[in-house]
Every structure is written in C-alpha cells, then in structure tokens.
Image (cartoon, rainbow, N blue to C red; front, side):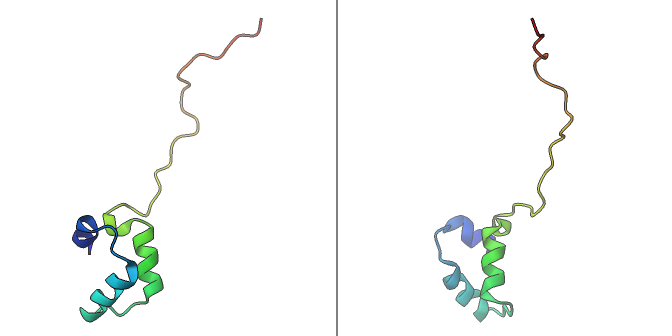
Length: 65
C-alpha cells in the first residue's frame, strides 16, 4: 500500500479499501482511513518528536535600561 500511495497519492481511501479487501484485509474502512490520514501509509511515525522546552536561548536576554 505504501508503494501505491507514493505512486498515486490521490487514490481515494474507499477505492484502496476495496482493493485490499479483495487481498484479505479484514478490518474496517474507518481504521484504514485513520491509518492513512495519520501518515502511517507514507512511513511517518505515529509518535511526535518532543522538543526540549528548556533549551538555551539563541540570543541573550535584553537588559532593562
């Protein structure tokens, strides 16, 4: 499916559902839709990368005059 989405990203999810259902997919259309819209079909991770909130500032703070 990843190869198909990469080659044809505009293929509607219901069409993909019908095609993979014929290949033995037994889950729901809703589950497939969520899988695709969250980017997993393109190989993106479901985890979000956290950025440190206490990183060093790139500029020194302004001094009050």
